[in-house]
Image (cartoon, rainbow, N blue to C red; front, side, top):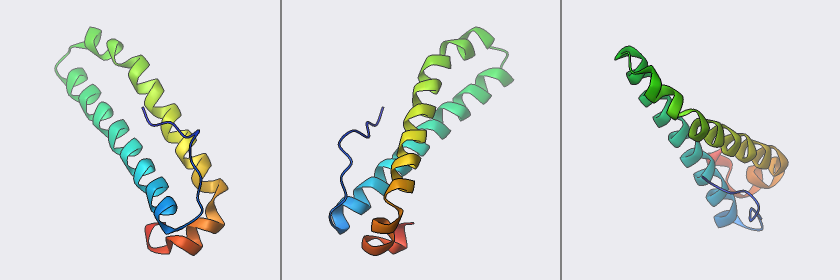
Length: 84
C-alpha cells in the first residue's frame, strides 16, 4: 500500500514523485481487478472473496493519492505540468 502522510511538494522532484506514486497505486489496483476478473471467469469465487480486503486497501490508497493530487493541483501544474 502507498501511504500519503509524507506527501510534501516543494519542487519538481516532489511533484513527480507524487504523480509516480499515484500511478503506481492505480497500477496495483488495476492488477488486482484483472486478477479478480480472471478468477470470476474461472469460477473461483472463493478466491475472489479473498481479494476483497486487499482491493479495498488499494482503493483507499488510490483515493488518498487523488485527494493529494487535487490538493496540490497548483503546485503540480507549476512543477510537473507534463505529468498531470
